[in-house]
Amino acid sequence: QGGENNEGGYAYYSEEMNRNTLDLLRIETGLLHAFEYNELLLYYQPKIDFAQGHITGAEALVRWQHPERGLLAPGDFIPIAEETGLIVQLSDWVLEAACAQARQWKEAGLEPIRIAINVTAREFTRSLPDRVRAALSRHQLTGEWLELEITESMLMHSTDRVISIMEKVCLLGVTISLDDFGTGYSSLSYLKRFPINTLKIDRSFTTGIPGDTNDCAIASAIIGIAKQLRHKVIAEGVENMAQFNFLKEAGCNELQGYLFSRPVPAADFHLMLTEGRKFSAVV
Ligand code: C2E
Ligand code: MG
Ligand code: MG
Ligand code: MG
Image (tube, rainbow, N blue to C red; front, side, top):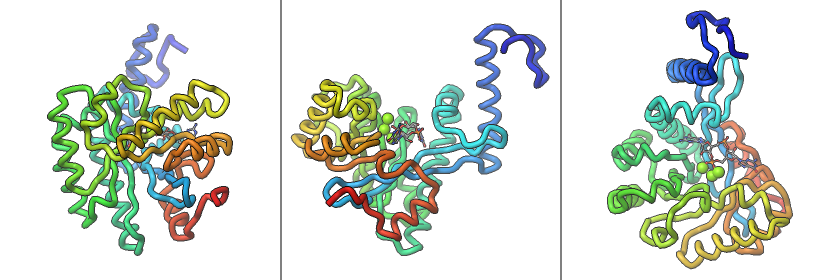
């Protein structure tokens, strides 16, 4: 802790801030290395429909196979990628990797299945529809293979511009879901103005179901709003049958969570699809 840096280069530091700066630099340098040496990979977490228990798609979640630290979760490096601007390169990598994977699955004979990628606010300042169109055509994919998960914070600024970007994405056949729904500050009246297909109930609400009456009320309310606006609704972070039963009863369309599967490597997800794996608790 503190004092000297035994990795050399920086002789003295003692403040917390310096320490964080060093961590930041180390991760920034490491990330550049990660791009060069293909240390990034995508894991896939299935999404399941309540009605049949079938896999309807997957969320692609980035991982970093770090040479010394092992498999890192996005929380360990996405914030730093955001701070350093490397998120732009990372986002390009994710879009490309997801489409390359989808193409392999297509060539293996699978029917189109939506792979959802997480899009950061910063990407809305660039020509997102063009990037998505180019990635799809590079891999000869229709828009049915892709979904974008965006967060409420993206709906707050320059509304008309954001709507036009989203509409262009939709014209490609790509769907948009609103991630971590209920945790941001977006006004409900905004919701109807955006071409959104799906609301994703944030895990923080799912966690409290069924014991916490507030979480139950919020989840039910989100499901109600989604129905009224004719959006699909999916709950993230579903870990147990009590949550499953409550959400199914409340009319939620889909679930994603450890109850069915953790995020898994591409080969494992492919196997689930070819085996036609179902959630067996659904009858
Ligand atoms: P998110 O988009 O809300 O993704 C869901 C997170 O919840 C994932 O964490 C997933 O592993 C975790 N999760 C899923 N089911 C359960 C469950 O039943 N219980 C619990 N406790 N957790 C569950 P992960 O993979 O660590 O990703 C964290 C966040 O990092 C994501 O939250 C997303 O915001 C961000 N992220 C992941 N991949 C990317 C990416 O490629 N690009 C960008 N910009 N952000 C990404
Ligand atoms: Mg997400
Ligand atoms: Mg989420
Ligand atoms: Mg979340």
